[in-house]
Structures are given as structure tokens and as C-alpha cells.
Length: 50
Length: 155
Image 1 (spheres, each protein chain N blue to C red):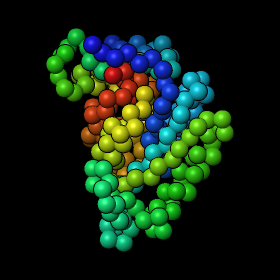
Image 2: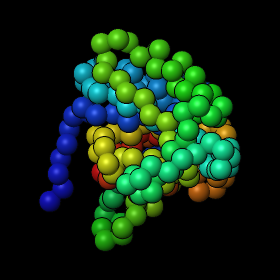
Image 3: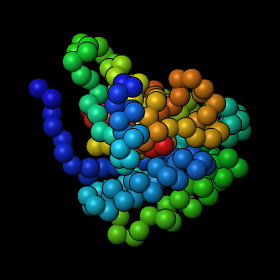
């Protein structure tokens, strides 16, 4: 999470696009923690793809 | 298998009276222009702002026992003014509808998107009024968790 948020901040992107579920927890009914962390910590708009 | 949906033909943008939602709308407009999408502007009036007895009415057979605001109530008129002002910014070539609902904003947005199945929901990360009342588990967080559409969270 930190890596992505930091990278995005330093590289001046317009938007972050991320899948709602990754390798972390395929069976979790809620969004993966990585996506969650990014949505909450990023200063950029985030597009969560389902 | 995951259904891959690449277009943005239906956009739902959730607004309130905040700067954030203005940004969300601007973004929604530029996306809608690119993809020739249908735009729905949804405003949710927080439960706490509504006088239940005076301002609302039940509609028989309404889905999810949605409470409807009376059109003549002050709060509805205020909301209507805000949403109409926002809608004025939408270029005329974009097909745009507006809707005002009341209730818990996150729940209402989730239910609405279940019904309308937009391809993407555009929402500000934090708003005013009804939106910011919910501190930690903010509306956008809940929405991101519970809808089956993609969500673009604007900052």
C-alpha cells in the first residue's frame, strides 16, 4: 500500500486504477485490504474496478 | 469468471453541497463526454436533516421501503435547487437525470446502484452535511465495499 501510494504521489498521476480484489484474499466478501488502504490513504482519485 | 465491462455507458455521480462533489461532477462530466455516457446525479439527504413526520411520505410498494421526501417540503426544495444548479453545468449533449432520495447515504447509494446498475459510481471521498456525519466508516468507504459497480473516489 505504502509503495503504491508513495509512487503515485511522487509520479504525479491523475488517477489510480486498482482491482477490488487481489491475490491477498480471493474469498473475502469485502474489498481487499490493499485496495482499501489505497482508497483511504491516496491523495489522488482512485478507481476501484470490480 | 469475472464479467469484463470496459465501457462507462452509465455513470452515477453522488453529490451533496460540498466542494468535493463539485469535483466529482466535473470529473463525471469529462468522462461522460469521452464515452458518450448517460449520467445520473444522485443526491441523498441525510436522515438527520429530515423531519420525519412533516417532510416525508411513504409510497406504497416502494422498493426497500424507501422513504420519499414530500416535494413541497423546504428540505426537498433546497436539495432540488442544489442539484439543479449542478445539473446546469452538464453540457446539453449529455443525457442526464437527477434524483433526490433520503435515508442513510451509504445505504441509499448502494440500493440505488443495485437497481440501476451503473458501470461506474463517482463519489467524493468526503463531503458535507449528511456525508461527513459518518466519520470513520465514511460513505465512500461503505459504498466501495458494498456495490458491484466500479467506484471512482475523487479527492
